[in-house]
Amino acid sequence: MGKIAFVFSGQGDQFPGMGKDLADKYPSAKAVFDMCDGIRPGTSEQCFNGTEEELKETKNTQPCLFAMELAAANVLFDKGVKPEALAGFSLGEVTAATAAGIFDNETGFRLVCKRGELMQTEAEKFDTSMAAVVKLTPEQVQDVCAKYSDVYPVNFNCPGQITVSGLASQMKDFSADVKAAGGRALPLKLKGAFHSPFMNAASEAFRVELENAKINKGNITLYSDLTSMPYTDDVAELLSKQICSPVLWEKIVRNMIADGFDTFIEIGPGRTLTNMIKKISADVKAQTVEEYLSEDE
Image (cartoon, rainbow, N blue to C red; front, side, top):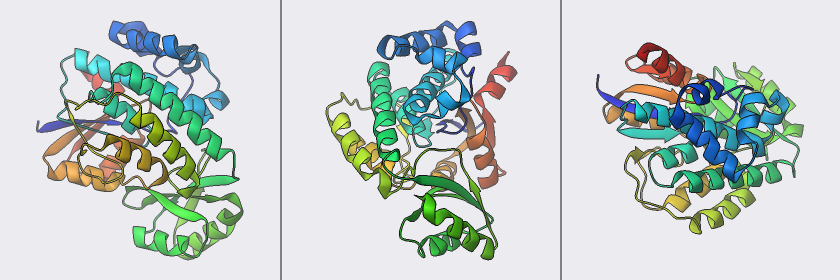
């Protein structure tokens, strides 16, 4: 085995009941949920027993996913699994930064709660939506987006899959143009145009929160969604601009592979990142935390 990386998932994979098995089985996981409940009462209840609709609300999704992901990471840390690098998709980058020691657990959770609130506030100001475009190249997607004033390529996920954000009123015509170009636009169940200029105000407000937070050096290499490269010292810049800028996921994974990483463990409730990584490279191992823990037993 070469070098191990943990990758923390973003919104979309959440489901009612996530994290309950971890909390029931591992004291280190329960401790994370207890910490989150102390700051935001009802977080574990939302994770374990909330409705799908409740968990889709960004102000709920982000703290709940953070709690589940940090709990899962702590279980692996306790088992002696030592990643040499971390990365996180969108909100997962805040969890990754916390796991890296850039924030202590309480600070990371307070920040992700605020991030979710700020992004939901902006999402509610505009009638926007997101879609996954498949079967087109990044250049083709960018060309189609360029025809529209308010549709943007925002997540460069893996070969043949790019997410766009934009005004709902422009998405029907955009989807038709994607089809004409040989692709498909699949609507996503996300309430907002994340990682686009529609999130500029949330980005600016989150930067203020970050500048007032205690930021540490960190003890594990962390790759940035904004640059696709390992973090520099300007944490506030990287994490605030990430909110209104594209997530360069495919580039991150390719850079990590070039840096010697051949084993990726997805920290989250689903397998979205695992599937993306397998499409990026057939030469590396990618698996979910659930799969890893079942092998370990």
